[in-house]
Image 1 (tube, rainbow, N blue to C red):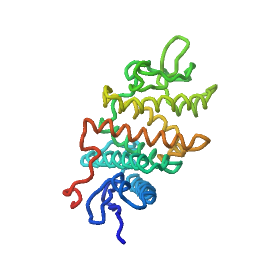
Image 2: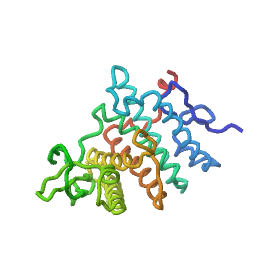
Image 3: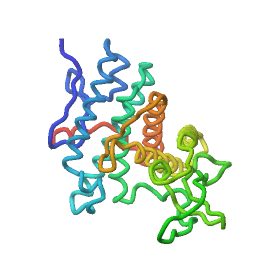
Image 4: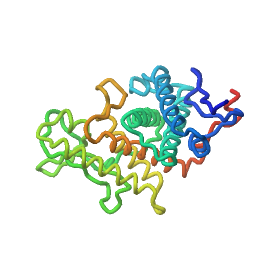
Amino acid sequence: MSRPRIVQNEDQIGFHWVTTAGVPVSLVDLVRSDSEPERLVPTHLEALDDALIIAAGRFGEILGGGRRPAGPEEQDLRELHRAIDRLCHEYEAALTVTGLTAGARGGQIIGTAALFGIRARLPLGLLGPAPLDGQLDDPSLGVVGGFGELHQVDPAQPGKGARWVVRTEEGRRYPATLSMLMFDSSGVNKDAALDEHREALRAVTVAAIAADVDPLAAACGIDWLLYDWLMAHRDGPDSAAIALKGKSVDGDATMIVCAAAASARARATIDPGLLELPGPARLSS
């Protein structure tokens, strides 16, 4: 008996599903009608992992910030982030339909994919300004003493996001990151910082679905908080692979999957083709 299959090769950025007749189809449409949806979802996840390995080999130097994209590489990065956005969104939608959960494996792969997608958009100018951009002080050389705090852009509008800062006793605010608090600072209650970051990321993810929200502001708020979280949860300082550990793994995995999908949905409101399947012309190329 023939089954839906994945189309993916070394020259293709990302992949897509096709029906038994060879017609492109989304994962969520497949699981709605397939007799074994619990097999399709993990297959999608592992194919995404394979696609990330290919992307790392092809674009690793650019994604790691070693150099800027040149010539046709800019279009390749656009294709990469669009494929990642679509595939992460399909995965989250399929989990919702089937009632399956991401688990540690799902959170780690979707987290790595989201990190790749953000890093692909960054040199293209598609990420948007960081929260509080232009409102913070420039740090001087040397050790800065102060208090690590997560400051919201607008406490009345959590959808605009938040950012870690170091607030000095003199009232100056210097930019900080979750990684800095976790690994380069002393006297930090790390569990409390993680919980505060989780709360902020979940709040901005929920706020993104409000009818009156600015989709660009919502995506920007999600992206920077998610990026900060992912950078602090890499497998190592030179790795892009996300590692989830501890008692909050399942909750963190769900948070990452939901945030990545919410960002893609928000951006798709102003870029309607973002989540579309590859068209016939693309498939034949």
